[in-house]
Length: 217
Image 1 (cartoon, rainbow, N blue to C red):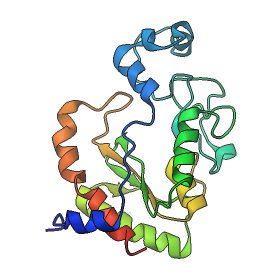
Image 2: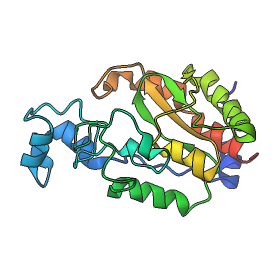
Image 3: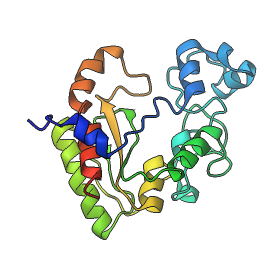
């Protein structure tokens, strides 16, 4: 089976770092509402005075953290130009402390591969203007992830929107980076907990798989 990894051997040779939640304020807002914010009136205003925050995917300041990284930031599409529940890229790259923290964390370590888990779509982003040897390596790993998860590879386009963590990782670190959307598509809302068993079944060995592959890079 493709799931048989010698965990001890893999972990004796590699390190796997997990960052369990890169948008804690946004998650808390999503779960418990605007009274969790330091400035609840501002958050309510950004949300058009609706107390329903299920579609909110920005941080507490209304900046979409996955449009914050310095990879094609100027060319990001569908930017509303002001704080918003989603898609506002912020006043400049890395303006938000959460994005800057992940950026610095990455630069402090010699990561061979990065995965940024997103919630909804069962697809795999794997290429950001990637060419040549890096593209070949990344595509090979993407096909391995796809074979295990069933997620389809997102089609390459000449002008991808950019601003995402793995866009930056691919472009700046010149190493494979992947953004899997892990659940069946549910639209602008949190993924139901009932989806967890199937998500886990598809993804539980991906960390070990990528760590094993990182040893070869």
